[in-house]
Length: 160
Image (cartoon, rainbow, N blue to C red; front, side, top):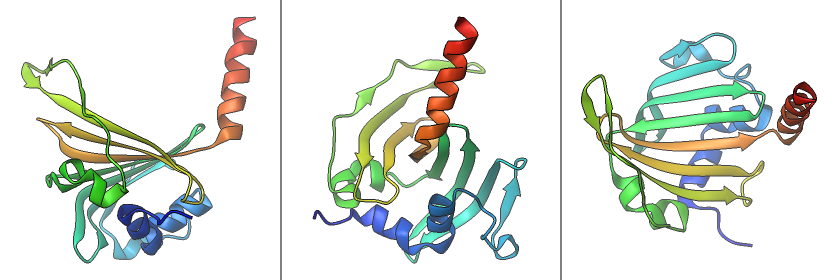
């Protein structure tokens, strides 16, 4: 069995993130001890989030959707994007996106799609992003296969 990548080891050791991933909710998270913003009953944002002793993020947004859990770890530190092999045991080519403007400000955006990590339970899909406006982010998705099937079925039924 392949060794769990360093970043996934850190997720697994962090009670808050790991309990959200495995339980599918933030009901077991002690919100009193963490700076946070509730964005309704389906989203929470942790500010100045300490994943581990040496890994801190300015924001971690967690959203619960019909398709599963989406997490966005935001940082100004490029190390995850530039040292992808070290943190995720693999690397991939950078996908260059066309520049665009947001409120007149030019935005450059690049990404790396690392795919699914089945060594983690439940499996997670990870992509890395570099934005001239937002900085760096790690996007983690935990798919809800039943939820996606229901949504596709509902979409198909509406078309017919």
